[in-house]
Amino acid sequence: MPTQTDRDRITVTETGRVAVISTYHGPTDSHGSRITVRRADGGGRRITVGWDYALGTTENHAEAIRQYLELMEWGGAWTVGATRTGAVATWAGWA
Image: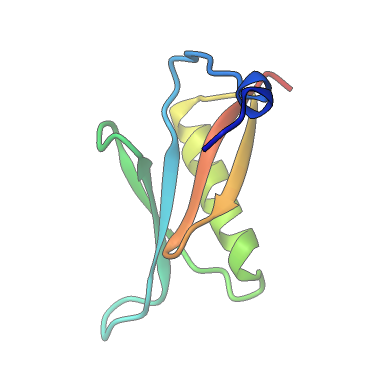
């Protein structure tokens, strides 16, 4: 259970932004490995980005998320963290 000190360190701010999720999809007979990126709330657009074998896993997810944010014209600083199936990005404010 969080202590009062822990609660004092947490700031909740409504930004009008939603988290962004990237998911890895392995190769099939007709497609190479790829990443899909979408809003966490299920709304909006979804994009698919081909896997860049010159990059590592973290870099591939970060690049796919960057492309999505650019397409959506969502600026600012974003924090990216790994998940079991990919990554999640949350808005961290204006850089």
